Length: 233
View 1 (tube, rainbow, N blue to C red):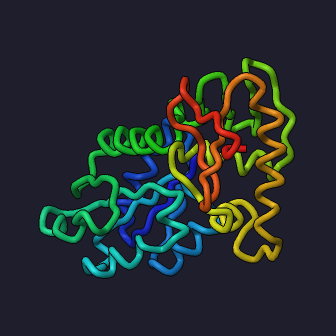
View 2: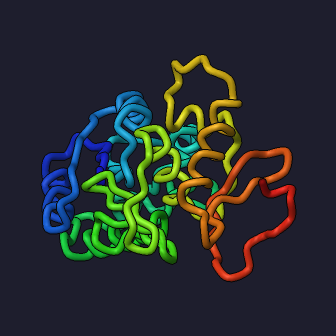
């Protein structure tokens, strides 16, 4: 089930997001402050943050908010803006899309779906598909060639996070923060062990996870010509 976090103090804007999310079974949570929204991003892991510019952020404030690592690494951002506020969301602010206020619920739903599809490959709000690999987000189930793969919870969460961001490399430290949490004190070797176990379970025919030298790991975005060097293992 995909989560939509709304940074707003406007009840009408919240109602529009709820109306746009409801038909696809997406869950909405509202936060009235930037500080609360960042905590929610870390704890709740939303697929999209809807940033209502009517809360009074300046251009610098928008940029500072969206530079937060937890938000920038894993979550798409769509802004609600009036025409006069569009200057607040320039290229440096990392806003992925915007809708104009007053919000058209149908347009917002389409834009949310597009952002989620671009980030995760999920077509109906509940599935991530990459070749023969399917991750059922509602049932916490992974299949390869229609065969169920037995993953532990942390293996599932690590695979889900990587598959939700295909082609993007992540350091071991970022993966630890995203999957194990900011208060986890184990070493980065934990990530290597889990990646090795995941590969053993899902890569009998096709490679899905690539090792990025001196960086960490990424989920392979384009199939058909995966790297074959021993450096990738």
